[in-house]
Length: 182
Image 1: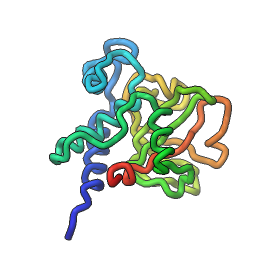
Image 2: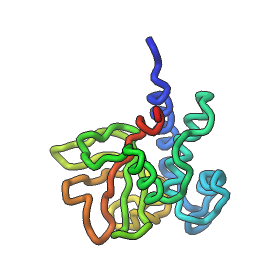
Image 3: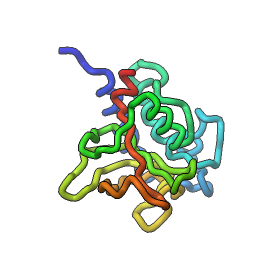
Image 4: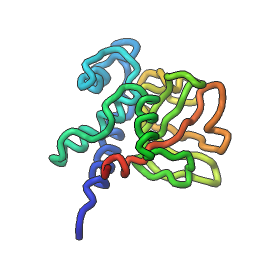
C-alpha cells in the first residue's frame, strides 16, 4: 500500500495547529513567545500573522516527515496567497468541495487585507458551517476576526451569500492537495 505524503503532511499540520490552540499574544499586539516563533521564518515581529500560522503548521509538518520546506507560496498576505493560487486554478468557492486541511480565506471588503484559517473538518450543508483552527483571531464572532489575540478553534459560516459583501467576508478556499501535489 502506497502512503500519500500529502495526507501525512495535512494530518501533521492539523495536529500542530491543534497543539497551538490557546496560544495567546502575551507580549502585546501580534507578539508572544509562540507568535514570535511563528513569525521568525518571515523575519518579522508584531505584524498580522494568520497566514504565517497556516504556513508554520504546514512547514513544520513537512519538515517533521523529512520532506523539507513546504511548497506553500511564501507570503504573509491572505489576499496574495489566494490570488497566487487562483492563478494556478487551485481555489474554489463551493463549500461542498471543502476537505480537511484546505485553507479558508476571508477578505475585508475589496481591500488587500483579510484573514486565513486551516480547515479541520468537513462542511455541514444542513448548518452551512465548517470547522477551523486560526491564528490571530478572537475566541468568538464578537471580537476581531482578522486581528485577534491568539489561536482558536472556530466554526465558520459558508452560505452562498458569504462570498460577497462590503465587510469581512469569506472569499474562498485553497485546495491544499493541489498545492502539495503541484
